[in-house]
Length: 566
Image (cartoon, rainbow, N blue to C red):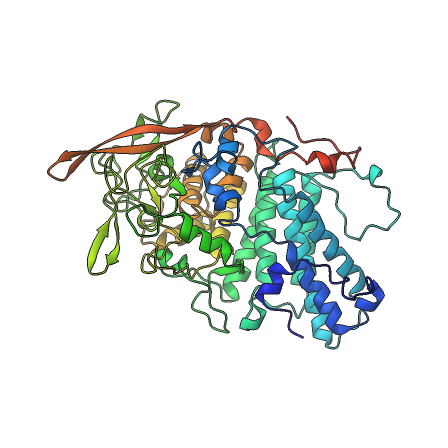
């Protein structure tokens, strides 16, 4: 039996036991019926977050990182970015990111399914293997998302009995959680009937072995990172390097490959067939709203139908892009805390008077800057005017205009023009192959230095956009810096930066403020630019490395300790 389609996978959160007008049917009844067993597994999918523009006021998670500044911040009270910039997160107020209970509900449903699948009525023996594998990957997924946000949690692989005493429940370590995640993924990979890739469009959204590998790769990388490996235990990095290498090798050997066009990749939904053109996407969120909201809330003021400017890319992100010809970083750092005095790499080919010329192609695919070409609209070429006084000009006091001098281009299909009532054709790509290459490059460098394996992994990403290979002979520290830069530009606005700066424990270096670029028209088509601080923030202290456990939950678990600083 095929599981329900995409609407039910991410919308039907009704408990499948609540199916009769006279009360709830028993688990025995559910698991004695093939279709109800399938329906129960379907319910386990119902707790996957939407990501993308699913946060309060359709904000992007990037808006509370150093990738961007939200145009709603300081303009609209109570929105995610305003509260975040003010440091208002508390154990009583987790804004729109209180997924603690949601993840636990997903884990509970997965546990109940796995408790019963062995004796359940399943018409096709292959489905028993496949469904068991799916449930284990789902459980691993929820655990990883849970411990990334809240730290180590109890490892619970069976459903709690009705008389369980929750006052005795204790937190496990992050390491124990990762071990449990890896075991679930390995067991799912051992299921002969769990596919590597979905080939039937009716099964779009179901979990696969490829997703198990992506989860395992990410979990091992996080476990070895400074936040969870303060002693810098080399064994953790070695395990991460081995796991990331195995994951990437298996994905590639099973037909996964980088999509050839970086910009176009984010404007389309992945196709599902036995030979898809999109071989990069590992898991894509099905609900279209998380991308539709990006399309209608990340708008350009000079276009019809503009709503709000959304997350304006930061100058810090712009500075992260290498030069195309030399392959070198343009900006090496800053001389001041406000990032108004950049340290320019004199050998890179960067020209401060022409900062947008000759950059990494991913820059042009991600960011609209002053003078950037938007599209041809009704026979007229349209260009971005983000200079002061321009049609898209910098206006820090309104939310319809950029607060940094930049607008988001990534995900936006300029041929589906805003104001025409057309929504984006893409969906949120939660896991993709490029991340697996970057995971390997980082883990391998930390475990063994900048080996050929590490170089090959990161250069594969750069080759996709015709960027030069990294120079040979880099030290481990130099290679680490290049990996951090590469993750930042390759995965920009994909919700990785928020977690990366935490696991690297550099939040206090990155999130105190973000800057922008103010362009003033000089006449004769020339402009003078100056850097400025777009906003200062108060959510960079160590306590923001983890979210607080909600007080409503903590009060039920007296043996739990609250996360540090909360």
